[in-house]
Image 1 (cartoon, helix red, strand yellow):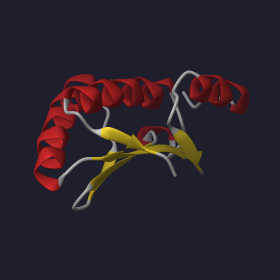
Image 2: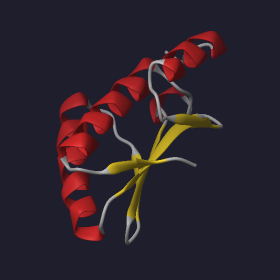
Image 3: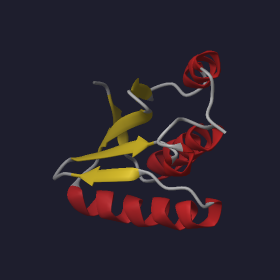
Image 4: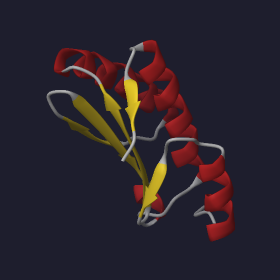
Length: 101
């Protein structure tokens, strides 16, 4: 079920570093290419288990995640923020540094 604007605001307050871009939340991390590949595999394993996935953009020294719920009409849901927290934990385990902006 899509979140209301108030619920989205509260969820963002509990997900530091994630920002809203339209109907998705995004975050980027500084990590070298091969480390980014390893992190993507780790994230993909967790995504398969929780049945939710992010759009992922890997560059030479950056990894960006964009999350929205496709099955809810590309709207934000609680599952998006749950996945964001999981990605943050995986990023920390891989030594990826959050990138602002």
